Image (cartoon, rainbow, N blue to C red):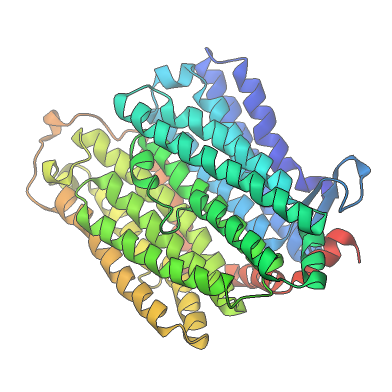
Length: 493
């Protein structure tokens, strides 16, 4: 039954390889991609259920016992993120069917899309740091192709910055891995946890931990390392921005969670206090960016930065309540960010521009699009009983219990300002005087709102069905806060 752990990686990988051979047969590519995405959701549900009933699931590849061999590990945290990834990827895939265009479809959009999902899910399920690097690279190489696909001037300009930043972060990743291996003699995460605990997290390991924080901070867009994100994520088509905003930065956040709750949790006076400070500045700068912009995509991109700061704050607190809130909020954020970018894509399709000053009155001809955006904006800001509220409440509670009153105040004030910034999109794009008549619109929303409605229903269900999801989230948080559970499952000690 442990073979279930590898299936979420194999399904998109096999689908991506198959799609390479059918790059001119667009209809067949869509069918293969859709089938793979539906199967992936089914596997994700099965994996969450299996971890819930049987505990952490592991798979030793090649029959080599850890810490010497490659091991895949599915605890509840990883399983929930795999399921959420499959849901987001399905919605974005169906949105792309109507929006990405035949030229991009013929130039391997669907294979690269599947390889991106392979890298994301592999990063969630790997049990050692070197393979985390490998899956990061799979994800990034696919993202390089997707961000430049189409060859517009802005894409080419921003892709250079995006690629250079990620090459630098990958080099730093290898350097950090090399230093850690030189000190401990292992890269298996469970074994690392044991050896760091035995040796004690002295100054040398603390420096390595900060180096890992820089690496994952670059990938997750933490202050001051988020400078590359606004331009890079605003350049490609909406569906690519949605999948990037919903998934890519979350892999960096996941890596921070995993390393700083399993490996580097012994000297919290340095690393975790630093995480708290960086999280606070990340929230502040994210809000300032979203308030200052009048571009729909840029506003939403800066809300990604704010969300990263709010979630990472919980790692600095390092309490079960805060970690549970962060997991809940992370699941919500993956879904709601993808949803908002897809809705923004529909707006831009109709208006022919992403500049809010050139939009207006879209709700007259597109009421469903307008009200879906309104509800999604409330969910993003954490208005009860929508999905963002539960996670924010738990993180706030954990922050207050830990004595981080100033960061909690920043977080709550930032939430109000984020609500203002996304409502600026609603009020100017949908509510004010109509700019375009039906005949003057630049495109149609036909087929674009179904995947948006799917994600919106999932988001609403996360809020209204909190009692159903909360036990899974709490189980995930308890596992993160008790490394011995993970160690015993992997090393069989």
